[in-house]
Image (cartoon, rainbow over all chains, first blue to last red; front, side):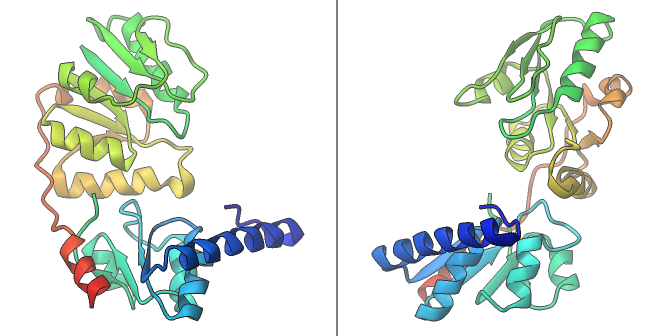
Length: 103
Length: 149
């Protein structure tokens, strides 16, 4: 998904968001787990509205600072859990949690 | 055999050129096989291919692996118990390969660099080097408990 601004960005976001809604609805998802990447955002909008669980797992490549998506998700409280994959990341970023890695 | 892998998503011609150059100058002797992915540079002094469903077979056959700093490749190499050198691909978003490799080096003593030009200098050290085995706890159980709560 492109995160570009402007009309094209908005249209693209609307397209991805409607697709995300149909997936969350059709699959009767009790939770959405997203492993990095901006595609998490439209999914998390629906999990918020539909009262489903949302988990964001920051990429293990991020050691010092959250990714752009991670920051966005944290800032707007779009998920119930924000896992990071290094202990020092959890110490440096309030609201995140380290409980191990996904490999 | 030395195996070189640059992954599938981002080209890494700089690394392939550096390896090819070392072979041309006989800094590296013996067979070299390169997985070149989406790059444009085709090595002249090595065997090469673009993609394979799995590179495990090449890793198993190799005495030394030279790889990019993608997470999949790095964990695969760490698990292989073979000597390897990792190079951070400068084209990776937000220089995340360098950030990742630096952290992995501090915990697991892997050999890495941002600069393929350092390959020649790193080779002698790398040939007998074994990093520490990966030993982070796994998130799975914690995540599962939360999802089922």
